[in-house]
Image: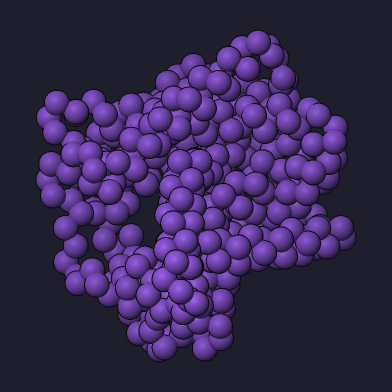
Length: 383
């Protein structure tokens, strides 16, 4: 069996596939396009308008507290776990892993670049491809060193980069940032491409990319560490420790997510006396993400709950396909240049989230149908 062949169902880790699928739902909800300050809706009375605004505000806060940044962290961690799985398969088959994996990441970089420049500037695939290449530099390290390095990157270097950016006035974009608001509503695909290329994080590399690359790489190291320690195979382990960690992670993590909201909306200013706060915030958000992984693992041990959570598995098995398919939701349903529904700026945030969840439901059904007769998704096959 060649390493290039897709993983057979019997060789997969069901809990990881399911968790990856759930993470895709969280990523979509966190990233779904919405026009802030939408004024294009019509209501029967001002009371209905206020009620809608209150619902939107509450929902945005809940998503910031419980979803935003947490599920992309989980997704990145699972990418690192996937690196471990591929490394093990290569060793079992006596294949030159470095050459194979480098080609694989270069191909992923091409896929991500096409996705970013022609469809969605918010692409994360390119970051994963670059970080994946750097994993080749450390995969022979000892287990403890990998974990420590992962935490240093995810927590310390991410927070330090955030502080340095603020001190140096980065980001300071060279373009008129108002074009970001034009991006979803332009009727011209050519104009859409122009804006895509202007606001792209890799075009504005210094302003946008270092913190993302550092954070993703640290998460991948943690995921690789989970693979090396056989976490997903040997769980549940100590239930007492797990339950204590769950409670601790939730309380601290949610509190740090709240502090992050206060910092990003300007309610809390990072003065010299609060220089330590970004480190605490990032550590807490990582803790919250790991808490979610543990909670998912707990629930996956309960047979009835496992049957429900397993619905996410086909989505996770073809994660690259489904990630790119989510862009089709943004383009066909919300963005204007496609000439279809053009919902951006016309629906409330709550309605936007509902549309996203309905689309994800279609993804679940499509993934289940596709994976019944195949071993991988269509984009994965091309990859």
